Amino acid sequence: MLKPTLKCMLRRWLSCVLLVLLVCVGAFGMTLLAGVLDAQKAALDKVYDESSIRCVISNLSGTKTDRLEINTMYIDLCTTSYRHDFCSWIERVNLKRTLKCDEEIQLTGISYPEAAVELLPENGAALSFFDGYSEAIFQTDQAVCLVPAAKLSELTVNGDGSRQISVTSEGKTATMTVAGAYYGGISSAVYCPFDYLSKFLAKNEYIYTDSLSFYVKDNRTLEEFKEEAEKYFSEPSITAEDKPMYYAITVYDELFNKTVAGIEENIAVLGLLLPILYIIAAGTGLLASFLYIRGRVREFAVMRSLGLSRIGVTGLISFEQLIIAAVGTALGVSACFAFFSGVAIKNAVNGLLFTLCYLAGALVAVLWITNVNVLRLLKSDE
Image 1 (tube, rainbow, N blue to C red):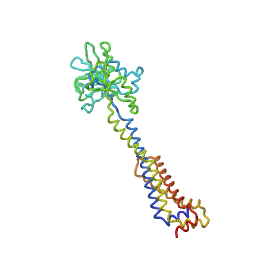
Image 2 (tube, one colour):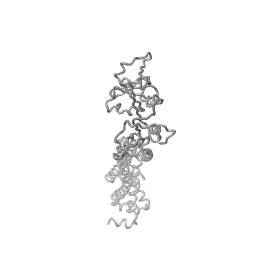
Image 3 (cartoon, rainbow, N blue to C red):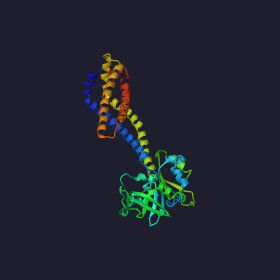
Image 4 (cartoon, rainbow, N blue to C red):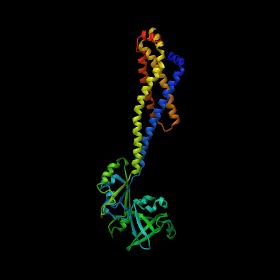
């Protein structure tokens, strides 16, 4: 069956080549389109997984984010997971408390370097930690600190190579091991872990934080997080009257929402386009196959007169279309893999689905033309 079919196709090689190219382009386009759709979905997952949505606590009018003296209740709300469910919605909680000390030094307790905006790289600051230390020290209650780089030369080096610094506030002295230095920032500030400063102050006064910010833990549950946050914080309003112990929250999610909306729109368009293209593929198979075989009715009549059944004739012509579709699909999918490295093997399924739709349309055309009796086929050429 294969040999006579190939001979028949060689007699019409130009038409066969054009049909192969048509299927090749279709399979190429559908495979590429599926790859683009997967890439958009991967980009959406990346945005959800890697975007940082920062939330900042302010006074009710939203005009002040520092020196708020936010009390222990809110600190526990954001940091004590076994007591408050709100902790499960957030991560990287930034706390800061500044204490004026003797000798014109201020001791600032922070939970992360970004809690002190003056230490951010965009403000010209840089941090340098000694061996064995990192910014993780700020999540502990150890007596360690960062000092201005210019002050390192004033500190005595111990026998083990370490340095220590002592600061005094209201008769109490805190002696800390120097874990590193910073460049830029406030030249009179010494930064220690927030929990250490709280422990240092615990006996003399109540604990509070000058500022409070954190990040949403799971961006996929952003709306649910906002509903949870509404239980504890208000929305900032310039007309609101500030009250002690009441605070507002600003969620900086504008860029995130805009990015997600754009990608989701692309995914929706591509998802809608795929089934439409499958329908077009079936229509293309119907039209192209009809044009390919409509001039061969006399040939079909001869086959029928020689004893070949209608199903046999239909099978032969369908086998031709199958060979054309198989070659075109193989070329199209291979070309897509060759020119676009981001296309995955699973995307070839879409190229195969295009071929199946094309063949479905082609089969309709074959049945349409061959589904007449022999006499009509013979007369149709007269």
